[in-house]
Picture 1 (tube, rainbow, N blue to C red):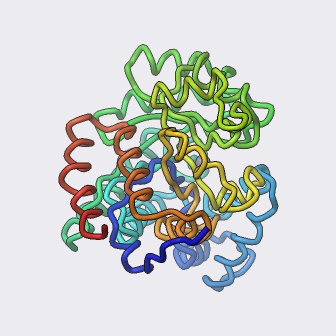
Picture 2 (picture 1 turned 135 degrees about the vertical axis):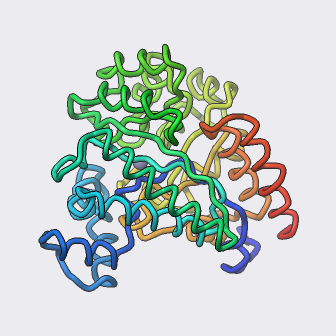
Length: 356
Ligand SMILES: [Zn+2]
């Protein structure tokens, strides 16, 4: 396949939307080093470049459980008000520098309780940092809207508490909910009470499913728990044979359920074998509502610009494909319809028109 070349500057300028990106997986290496020194946490190395390389290699094990273990060193510096304010603000500025105009950031407040903060204080502090970042990005001429998804950890017993927090902060920047953590052995229906509560309260949610575990996990997330989107969903291809969709794949495509796909992350956890063969391309071509995401920018050594470049260079994507996944993401974003439409019509489509 001969891919049309699109230079990196053009890719960086294209307006982007990211639905699946973890706050604790996207810190700047230099920030991890500085904050770790302040709180007395020992790192594998104190050189920012070496630390970035360490993350990428440690996360490259082909195993989701080991991938998740690398978060120990980012979470260690996210236990204080100062650490959360700084990482949240920098998170927004880094998205803006990457050309992102809409982002949904996700994290589990229950993992940030080793310091002085309570669950509500964690959420308030992150929102404060995100707001500061959005104000700075707008003042610098790169406005980015960031909504928050609160996560419960599927292997622990505080998912319902996290869901209650999402309801409590729904008018303060939290736009939805998710469960994160190791998928195998921890099916979404274990937390049915939390999802039923969110549905009663009209709070939208996505569920990590079909990454380490296959079709039953995706089926349960959608049809038992009621998720409106699926995190990853790469294993949905198990339900597609020679381009013919099984009933679950048909449900996902025909109901326009967004798949939050994260190519580099999937290579690292073994959920996909190469960018060229990653299911995102086949699913896009079959008309699924696929979206492109980073998952964890530090841990996976990536950005939205880099993910786009990989698909252009290795999977034959053109600008139209990049526009499609960007519009898809906004169509399935958890912010109100009028805001989504305004971003598509006023920002994304004009931005791609100049590149086409
Ligand atoms: Zn994820």
